[in-house]
Amino acid sequence: MTVPEVGDILFLMNDLRLHPSRPEESERVRTRLRLCTFVSYGPLVLPFRTLLSPLAGFTNLPFRRVVHELGGLGLGTTDLVNARGLLAGSEKTLRLIATHPIDRPFSVQIFGGEASIMRDAAQLLEARGVDSIDINMGCPVPKVVKTGAGASLMCHADAATELVKAVVEAVHVPVTVKMRLGWDASQLTAPRFAREFEQVGVAAVAIHGRTRAQGFSGTVNRDGIRQVVEAVDSIPVIANGDIRSVDDAISMYDETGCQAISIGRGALANPWIFRQLAEWESTGDWSPAGSFNDRLLLMRTQFRYLQEWVGEETAVSAFRKMSHWYTKAMRVGPALRHAVQSAKTGEEFEQVLQEIALAGPRGATKDGLLPDFEIPVPSGPNEHW
Image (cartoon, rainbow, N blue to C red; front, side, top):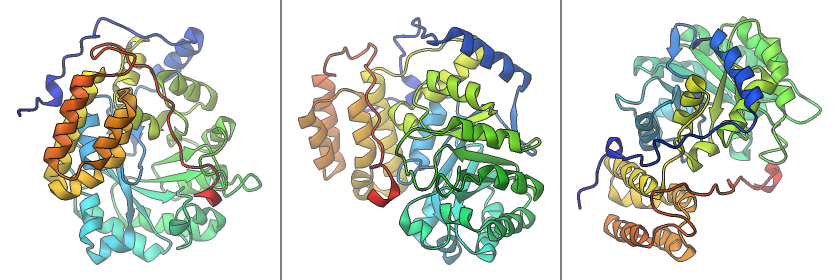
């Protein structure tokens, strides 16, 4: 069958506008943001102030493409990329840094614990034309931390600063750092790191408002993010964590004083969130996220892009994690959600999608507003992962 393009989506709810739940807070934030008309990483000016957070297995090229096509995305960042694997020419690693003309500006996030390896990987990326390079100091999972990379760098201040400095001095493109507030509640070192990184030439820092020990448990510490904002002189601080709606974003701006935000899981549940935030900043209100039919079309489009990228066999298995987010947001029943996960070929996958299209959403219409669903998170503190 012929599948329409994302650009063909008919937004039947165009006349419907959504409004902030706290109007005074919204206008206060919009007034402040108007004084900072753009966010820049050194010479790189971002078209919007809302970024896509790197999420392993999710923020790959096909997803970045559909989000860019929906509009409002300021910067897309790759999955976590192993610097050593990049230098070794690993086919799997090189695939992670693939891009597309619409995927601009484009950042690659690299991880590693050795300054020389990170420096050489950054130079390779610059030669391949990336717009920005992001150093991961936030990943809390053991397989990354045990190599001396990710959040473990926050336990070694001097070594981390030397690593970052080596990368900054090795390339001409902007270098940024993504980190957590600290290793645990007793070591909230992000403000100190941000200040030191600015002094060695980092163009921006992104802060997830939890510690490594928290994993994704508890709530984001917005006051901790504000301390990072107040610690730097002029570089942008990008706030991240628990931004699942426009209202969440408004509160993050208001409580932290940040210039930009980065969204991960919230974008998986609602790929329209970047466009919604651009509309809110411009007008004070925004259009709804996509309907059941819109999401079904977007799902097909992303799967097609994935097929083009990795081939049908790999795409069918690789898309299972993403299809779970789509079908939950679309209010698809358990049996059909299971059928999507069980598809073994592109033909089987499309047959299930046709069944989903006929069944429609539970408790909603195909072209109307869909109820929000609770966004799942990894299982609490990292020791439980």
